[in-house]
Amino acid sequence: MSSEVILIVEDEVDILNLLQYTFENEGFVTHGFVNGEEALEQAADIGPDIIVLDLMLPGMDGLKVCHRLKTKTRTRDIPLIMLTAKSEVEDRITGLEHGADDYLSKPFSPRELVLRVKGLLRRKGQIQNEASHWQSEGLSVDFDSFLVKTDKEEVSLTSTEFNILSSLIRSRGRVLNREQLLDQVWGYDFEGYARTVDTHMHRLRHKLGAYGDWIETVRGIGYRFKPKNLPSGSNQSNAET
Image (cartoon, rainbow, N blue to C red; front, side, top):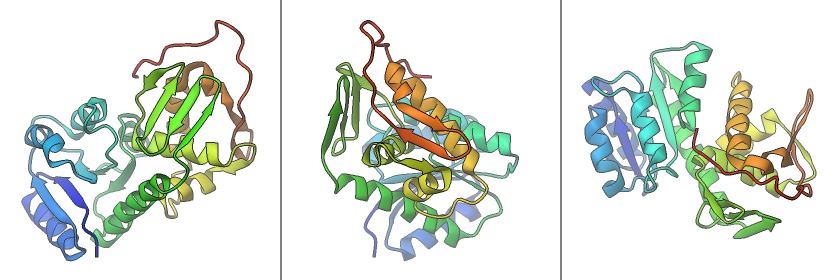
């Protein structure tokens, strides 16, 4: 049985109650909120292991809540799954671009949501149990503290961006196709969502600045991590997008 803490933000009380009942039966400790403002106020103090966030909320919508969670030091590394009644690909991509780690459209199976939550938590645990540190030139990654630095400046990554970078580093020199990345990062078959890998990869490269070029695109296949010697003066600062 699980002992992780899950924070759920869902304005439809019947759905919120169902989700809390489902996750508590799986051994989770749940905290439920019907609006984003209250969830934001409490999230850092609760310190959940994962967040499930509805997109269509009264007042502050899920995208704004997600963005604020991902820009605060105490909550930015918490995996976040977004729920929404919108099913268009562009809507899904928008959620991911705001920092969501996964996306599930309504109506959905509570069991599928549980599997996705466990997949993200499992992947996070695997990274914590592996080698603690990696560095090459000015890029360093501390796997224990989820800390990435470029030229001694901290880079703010979402948990999924961090997991993608970790997978690429651990497989450096080898090409990982999108399906492999989906399996390693999300922990299950994410059929039809291969484009989300490209979205996360674009943001990750941007945040790594000059070191983003170390992530090579292998056309028609996937991605490969290959450190290169950077020319003097090529280092860039890493601003949030």
